[in-house]
Amino acid sequence: MIKKEILMQPNNIIKGKYTCTALENKLFYKILFNAQKQNKDSSKYTCMLTRDDFKDVFKNNNDLTQKNINDMLITLHQTILEFDYIDKDTKGLITYKSGLIGESKYIHDGDIYEINLHEILYKHITDFLQMQQIGNGYTPLNLELLFRFKGAYTQRLYTFFRLWSRENKTVEVKYTLENLRYYLKLESDMYTEYKVFKQKLLKRALKEINEKGNMKVEIKEEIRKNRKVNEIVFLVKDNETRKYFGEKVDAKECIKKPELTETAVTNEIVITNEIIDFYVPNKKLFTQKTLSDFMKDFCTYDFKDVNYKKALQESILITLEQDNEEKIKAKAYNYFKKTLNNKLVKANSTSNKAIPTVKTRFHNINQSFNKYSPDELEKMLIESQRDKFK
Image (cartoon, rainbow, N blue to C red; front, top):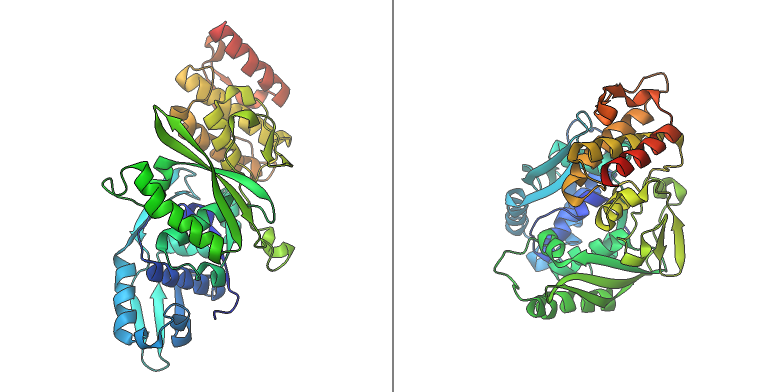
C-alpha cells in the first residue's frame, strides 16, 4: 500500500481539461507529488521517480516493465493539459496548453527516471507563495485514497468534490452539466443524453467514491432548463481531513466556497447549517451568477479592508461604465475579474506606491478614482445607477 503522500493540488489544475486512463492519471499525480516534494533547484523543473515510485502505480509487478513505463510516459507527454491562470507580470488571464509532462530520461545507473515538467505547471505545483498572491488556492489530496479508485472519471469527480468540501460537514456542491462535460473532456458524441451520462458515468463514479473514498456523495437535485437537466446539485460529506501537517500547510490552502443557490445571495455563504462570513459590498450590483463567481474567485480577500474595498468599488465602476449596465453580467465578468485582479495586486504592494490613475466618463468629465475615499466611491456607485436606470 502507498504510504501517506499528500499532494497540494492547485485548484485551477483540478478543474483543468485533459483525458487520461485511471492508471495514467495516477502516474501524473505521482509525478506532481514528487516535483512538489523534491523542489530544490527550481531552474530545472524536473523530478525523479524510482522503481518503487512506479510500484505505487502498477499494482501488478508483472506490468512493471521498462516498456510499459516508457509507453505510459510517452502517452503523458502527448496528452494535452489545459487550464487557466493569472499571469504574474501582466496580471491578465492566460489559458495554458501543453503536454502533461515534457521529455523524460532513464538513468540506467540507479534505475531512475528523470521527468521534465513545463515551467508554468512546475511553478503552479511548487511556488505556493506566488500562486496565493494571484488568488490561486490549493486542495490537499491524499494519494493513498485517490489511488483506490479504478475509474478515471471517479478520480476526476472526487477531486471536483474535494475542491469544494469541508471536513465532516455536509455541503451542497453544484455543477452545470456543461461544466462537468468540459472538465471531463467528453467529446460531443459521448453520453449525449443525460440519462445515459447519469447511468453510465455519474452513478458508477459516485458508487465507487461512496464505497472506497472517505466521502459520501449523492445527487440532491437536477435543475432543468427548457425541460433538460442543466445543473446538478450534489450533497457531499467529506470525512477526510484537510489538515495533514498542521496550520503551516493549511495556511497555503484557499478552501474555496461552494456556488450560491438562489436563496443564498447575501453577505454570507450558507453551507448546510454552517455560515461562513464573506463580506460582499455592493452585492446588488452583481447578478446571481456573477456574485457566485466573485465569491469563488476572491475568497481569500477580506473586502472590509479599506484598500481591498476601494479596489473592488473602482473595478465595479469601470466595468459598469464599460457596458453601460446596471449590474455586472456574465458577459462582462471576465473583464471585471481581470480589472479587480490588477487592482488587488497593486493594493498588496507597499503603501508608498500610488495606484495609477484610471479615467472614467462619469458626469461627462475626466477624473481619477484616486481622489475618492471608499465612502465617496460608494455614493458614486449608487448615484450612477440611479441616474442611468431611474
